Image (cartoon, rainbow over all chains, first blue to last red):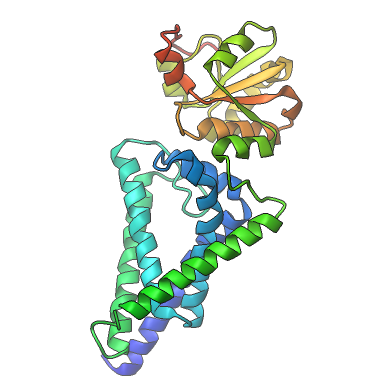
Length: 148
Length: 158
């Protein structure tokens, strides 16, 4: 793969992830109360942590997306997005195995209702993209360790 | 590793600061402390426990609303409750609208703990204009009712 192809593939992958995470963050920022209700559906966190998470998480997603888009602190942003996707998959996985019939809340409270299983499949696809971006970034910077 | 991790934590910190700041300034902001109870209070609803539910059930004009799915409702619900699934509000609402309008207090419940569905329904009811009906959420839900060995009803009556 030529350097030019690697650079542009990494850039396009990063922008795609940024678009996904901005699309996920904006509805949550606009409706923190609905997102808090979605978080509590997972029955994973003590109630006292639900509101702070509903306030902070969408902005962490948005800041990560903006960093991916601009290329500023891109390595940290790719790591952050990968970590978020792993956390989301874990939360959805526990809901799936506990048989909870809940709305994912991934793209906001008012987004079309989907099963947790469907959301997990989509999350895995995003993880594959995030993993590819991580690998392309490593190739681009010329080291497999991507300065990790 | 170190540089990427520092960047990642810096992005999280920026997100947290911006999020808390935006929440403080936004008219749609939610209370950071107090969990569901505080969030409900902000919307004009409140949480009630089993003792309060039993007290209100003795008062005329109290309506219990089960926010779970029709299938769950048929398997067992608090006697006298009507079914208004939070995720099927639009199709079910006309069926129970008259009873909601007659009620003086509306107590919503779901599967207890942090099931969240009752909170969602309470917010829908407030949006539909039932603020003055004193919308409340029964925090213990059906499991709390059953733990107290209180009777349940089966089937769909409403």
